[in-house]
Length: 437
Image (cartoon, rainbow, N blue to C red; front, side, top):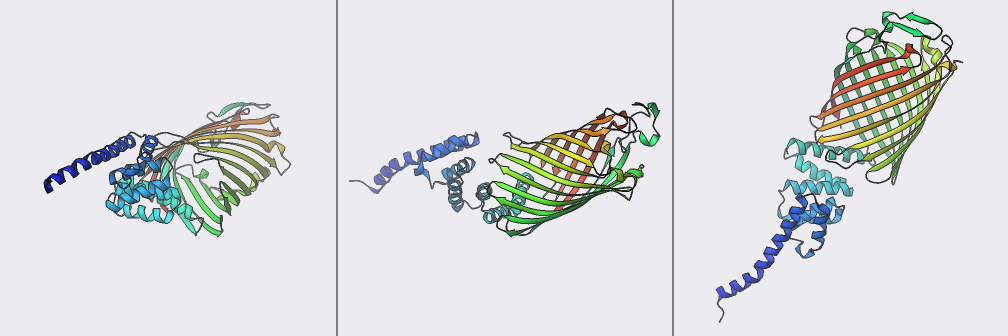
């Protein structure tokens, strides 16, 4: 006759192998996830549907499913896990991210905010803030959103006036000439101030209107004659249709030199952004603008037509690199019967951005532009041709969701077949920014 103790032993002998097997599968799943073999982990989980409901299995299967693009399965697994362990913030963070990828912005925001309120480590906090910012941008499709900023900083410009390195040069037909001190290179420190914002309002499904404006002041410590002020205004509409974004805008720009209006630019532009896949998009653009110079510079008044083409590619890598490549062509046609002041321009830009950590960003850029003028200079009897190059480096540190600090270095070189227009300059700046989102 079987006693109660004997029956218990028999039952345990049947259950223990199954429990051990379940623990072994969950452990194998964990090992694959921690090794970054997420596709293999997902396949292992798929091969053992009988393990669904086991918390350890659900957790790692949910992570693998989300990373493998099986968002629905990942959400269900993580939701099951959190029913048993609601205090696990890592699982809640992964669930919030899955909701975000599914486009469930309200649920994602609730989960992100609940984690944020627990004061997580700074790196996690910055990651959450990035997702909250992305949710805010996407919500701009359905509700009015705004973003404003102020910025202040300081720096040094090695060639404030884009002057020549030497006061003596040789010019076509004129021979050796001497340039006044104001035409040679002047170096100075400067203070930088800026502010601006953008407001976006949806008016129909997929269609929104926007208005933006910003202003920048650059005040030099000694060479105040070269103090600069730039103001920009723009307004337009954006139409989002599946994988395409269409945007049209009216723009206005005013440049001020030492408190005097130097130039106004009024323009219209149109852009088409085509999303090829999750990692790649192409942008095409067309624009037209009127350049209205003031005073003695009015002889430079012109109309300029521009075309642009760009490619953005998200690369694989630990630092989340993003590569952007663009090319452009423009025709500047003088409106004051001075074809020697009109020109054809073409060039390009290559930029790559890195994120070594949630709070760090690195931007590297190279810009090249060539100008060929419309006819010979009336004094030197040579048709001017310039080549401009710039290398730019920026290091960004996110302090929190609203504050950031940025260090910038630019090295600029302009060469020309007329020595009068050649110059080099190096610019360094540090800027502190506060944003309201």
